[in-house]
Length: 142
Image (cartoon, rainbow, N blue to C red; front, side, top):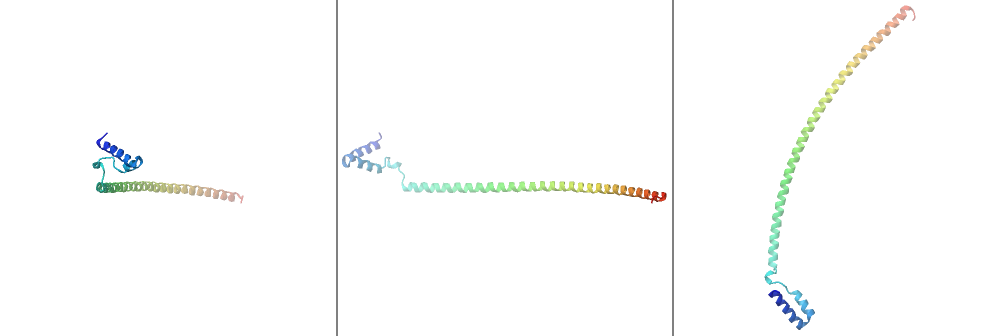
C-alpha cells in the first residue's frame, strides 16, 4: 500500500471509531484519494479548455480551407467536363445534321428521278392510248 493509501486507511479507521463506520465512509467518499498534485484545478480546466478551443479553431480553419480548395478544384473539373461535353455534343450535332442534309438531298434527287420516270411512263401510256383511239377511229370502231 502506498503512503497515501496508508494514511487514508488510518484516517478512516480513526473516523470510524469516532463517528461510526457509515459516517466515516461518507466523509471519505468526499476526500480525494490521490495526491493533490494529481488533481486538476479550475485554472487547469480553463487552460485546457482554452487550448482545446484554440486547437478546434485551427482544425476548423484548416478543414474549411481544405473544403474551399476541394470545392474550387471540383468546380474547375466540372467546368472542364461541361466544356468538353458541350464541344462533343456540338460536333455530333454538326455531323448528324450534315448526314441528315445529305440524306435529304439524296432523297429529293431520288424522288425527282422517280417522278421523271413516272412522267415518262404516263406520257408513254397516254401516247399509246391516243394511238389506240386513233386506230379505232380509223377502223371505224368509234
